[in-house]
Length: 87
Image (cartoon, rainbow, N blue to C red; front, side, top):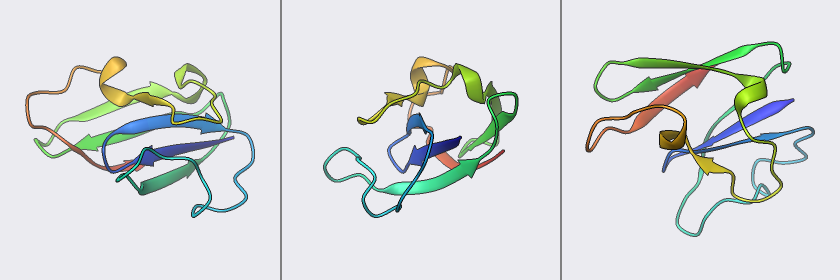
């Protein structure tokens, strides 16, 4: 599976990723990172305030659409953005 993270903080899990350029994202947004892994793995998201947040890949919604905001799964401070991620 692959987790797609956008610059505006939206996440989704997709089974197969043909091309980053053709992945559906909200208008004005773009892909920040793609995390390959298994549903038994975890992803770590790094925030601009120095915090790191861990989510199991299986907890990230599978979607062919835009996904969900990461802030639905973790509590981010005001004005805090996700700047990087690893799996």
